Length: 631
Image (cartoon, rainbow, N blue to C red; front, side, top):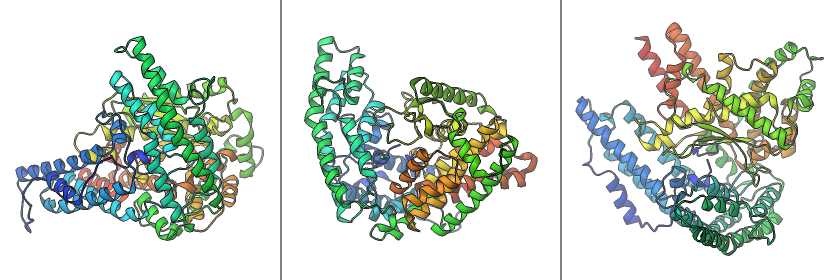
């Protein structure tokens, strides 16, 4: 799972907002944009033929512009720098103020203006794609700017309240004394960061963009968990953050014992003087805001809610499909998958031909779930590692290009496992210092069916998110923005497609496991129905839950979490099935045209080696590959 943008991603929404505590006047923004592209204005000449040297030169200039723009955006975001393994502003947080967002908007507009200096006709094919993607991205940023307060920056799925400890634990590595001091400096600045967060929440409140009531207990619980334990509570074991910084400091080789104790004492002081008051202020505000919350769940309740949801759907799916069209597509896909499930029912000799009874059996029979004990959780983790390792041995038959970065399996940390999603992926550091991570939530084993283990591992790990994201990050032939961007339809569409691919290699040999694959696809098809149902057709959370319970075999607890996710992330869940459908359609068309010339490895290379692209651009790229092979 990857929240848009997409990091991408594809990891944290807030981490992908390129910010920093800088002052940029309109004059300096314009100067910056001109400096980013320091060549004479290129004038297009109709019907001109360009030499290979001219094409190479113009493409090089364009790519240099794209890379400098990307680097400038990253330079404005200390947190994104850290995610990418860059330790330049290692002691800072992002600037998330609206004033800074306004200045970034001016920079975006000037980037767009600077594009006019590029002669598109003189670019090579990849250069033309880069130009088109860069331009589209800038226009989308500008178009979506008006909706920046139509989101929930704090919710049960994430936000700074949980991202701060996650970031410090998983992203902020400590290899020397300076990096330990940077960690402490970040702790000292949490209060100031949360002051900006509160300002943003209050601006959303003024617009009456307030999360539904169910969100509030989750957030309050997570906040209280972060500031529990030592040093917040005397006599208690170390809290999550203190435990992390203590362990990291104690491993240092460039600090003596006295120095380590001093660093840990400074961290404790920062936790008490900055982190604790920051969370207490957020808790106080959140407690008061809860009094204004209602049980209305959909984006339709926002000012211009329908227009916002239409814009969100377009951004997520990269198509012009309407909410009604997506809803109907979901209903058709649910019916198709139900029919395939009935075939498996017969294969396992189920006692009746009633699909709902089979769903109940899959939900409740103990053979499909590990016990909710330490031993059961470890057994699941070990099995997940085996699944990933087994697929690693099959990659040569599927891919020409493979990533250098490894993929490891990690349980979700205890402090956030109660509210976090069931599984998700975190991309590797570009310097190789951190592998890709497939996180599995083992809080409640009743929510992690054994028969879905294979499909889940293929989706989040290999050949899913890890292959797509790690390959993109390691590309050498495209500008940086294409390596680290992404849209939900492409990123999640690939991951869902990756659940099907192993079946074609002989995996899912257990019919129940194959049923699990179908159950995962069914889940994504039902999302098309429910997301549009909630945000356009005014479905209640209860109606959405009833639909899932009736039409999918997933445990009710799992369904409840998913529906709550769709509510706080309007449109995001629709990208999975829309993207998968398009990738499969392109593959089947290519197979039909190429017949014996079709090579699955080459197809995957076309899909993965240009970075994340919108669905219409992917279609053009695949068609061009097919045409070339047919000559």
